[in-house]
Image 1 (cartoon, helix red, strand yellow):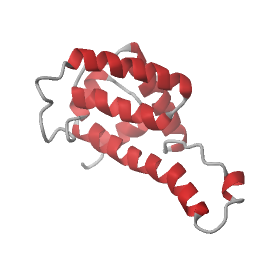
Image 2 (image 1 turned 30 degrees about the vertical axis):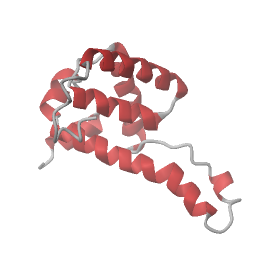
Image 3 (image 1 turned 90 degrees about the vertical axis):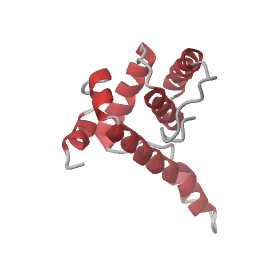
Image 4 (image 1 turned 30 degrees about the horizontal axis):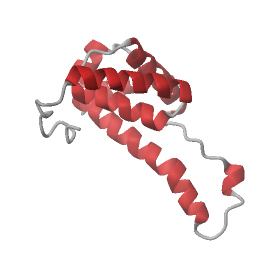
Length: 138
């Protein structure tokens, strides 16, 4: 959408309309418990630099609670399924269920760190582990 803010958002895009769609999607994915998409939508909110709705606040709270408990974005990886897979299927399964969550967590952390002043003002104390990143030597 913004190439991670290296390019400005196209002025032809109606940010308010897009923001409403993102908020509706966040609400849906809060209910579906799809943390991948939830994290990606929260990144969109940060990159659009829009004010957070109650859905956004709830999204940060859910993701923050999970992150602070596990310091990881949980996946639907099931070891019982993994153990039954043969050949390269096990690696493909692990990649599908684990790699993207780590990748998403890294990108989200980067965006949060690069926007820490705005994030701290808009979402104070979203989760302590991110506050630790903010206070680090970065």
